[in-house]
Length: 213
View 1 (cartoon, rainbow, N blue to C red):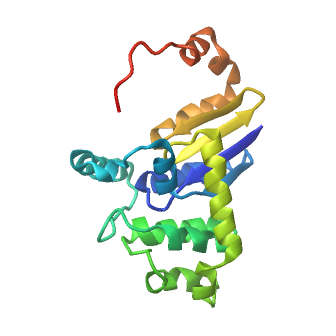
View 2: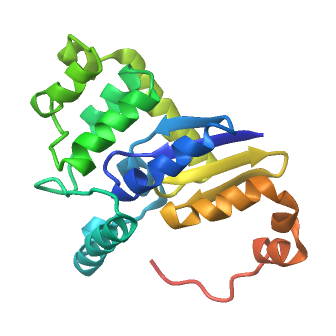
């Protein structure tokens, strides 16, 4: 069985889920996999929530409400969505370590700072001890790792972030969104529940009508 956490620094929901994922890693070998959300959306022919005006407003308000309710500091950057590629590459240049993920999430979502170019990421790189930031952002190994993570996510059927994935002899199971964290935790603790007759019926439920696209 493999366990993966797919995330993009573009997602405030990933920021909200990260502390619980980090705690879960103390007991379970969850691989940390930065991915490019835009590539997942393109693969599935989806529009992101920020690309639908009413959904964008609701999503941002929902994020802020969740953070305030949980007592989690959260400040949106000056503009969103933004290009997350530099932050993702910097993270992977730092081997997607917990410290790097902490620093980048805090930079973007705790302090509301930009993260879309070298200048905006300079404080993060300095804190991580990375002296040549320009080289880090074009690191071929970081680029390849991001591509491999995103391709792996697509193969597993990942359609959004954050997603916790379990892959075993039954194939991949996806737990999408911060509100699915408890469901993922139950799957680890009680796999029999998810093999129940009711759950198996859902897997085979037929489609009665299809919408024309």
